[in-house]
Image 1 (cartoon, one colour):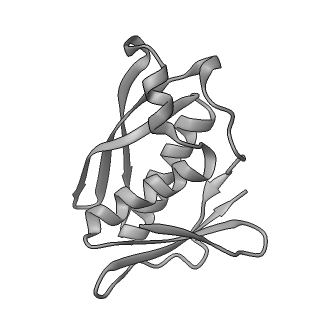
Image 2 (cartoon, rainbow, N blue to C red):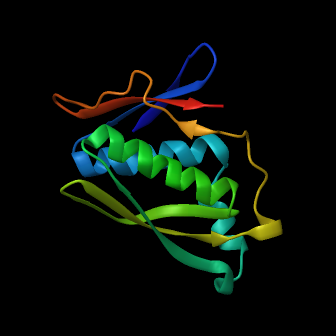
Length: 142
């Protein structure tokens, strides 16, 4: 689960999940939703030949660094490679590395218009916490 929250100059979301892996998955979904509307519906409209998967990988000394790296890899795929992620098929946290296998669409000219440009996920006020649920507040530079 995630929700967008007010932030003075940028966009911010709070992501919550029952597990660490789900927190990373939900953060990817949150980032996607800030740029593109209803990717699942769009997937049904494109031919099977346009569907594929991508592996994104990030490493770092802690979960915060790995999360920011992973989110910025996703933003790059959407904004610069014009590739539309539909879902996270697999996510693996292993030591100082995280990797996610994403199912998506090579949309090219048929890619839906982006809602906004998001430059990057930032480290501003970023801290992953674990209580009853895993939680993180992510600020995106727009």
